Image (cartoon, rainbow, N blue to C red; front, side, top):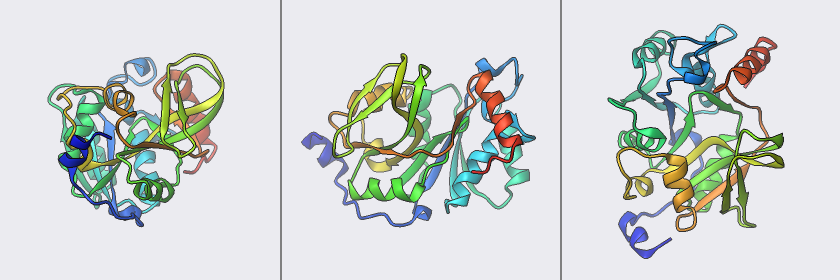
Length: 254
């Protein structure tokens, strides 16, 4: 990390012990164009899975592990999501970061981080569920004084995802492009992000978190990866949406 960046954030990071000290940002502004045939006219995260909007499973997975505060990043048809939250989670501590125009994943996270009240936030996608141990990744994030911690899922025989490679100290050594891999670690889409560090970056209003933050800065920022092998599903394409229907209809619990 360069000295200018260290000076710009000028923060001390203590060991983090409680998941409840973090807020969770859920990115829920996606249009879900690839799911149009299966889920017409809804934000992607509102796609029903076994009779329940998928975002409900994501929220429940965080609540189950002690997270009590949420920031929902919304865009397309945001009222469908806010109405669902108000009816089904009336006591939830929630803020809404609503995009007036699409900001990309990075811009959405940046807007949401500007509303955060804690030093660190979890970040995840409203259309992806990865059953990670939040306490573990949060503790390792704090112990390593990381700017960003990624949850990584081991996979075999895949071509839909790129691969993340780690050094011995768990820092990121490379991001590999999507292609066929016999085995590897994929980005599971659950992050811990140091808010002050992230907001100090000179990033545009609209940008890709994956390309213009992580892949562009991992060599000069402290980014680590934590491997976990919990249940993972991304409903972004019709075949995996159907898989989620099958999984949860058969009492898949997260």
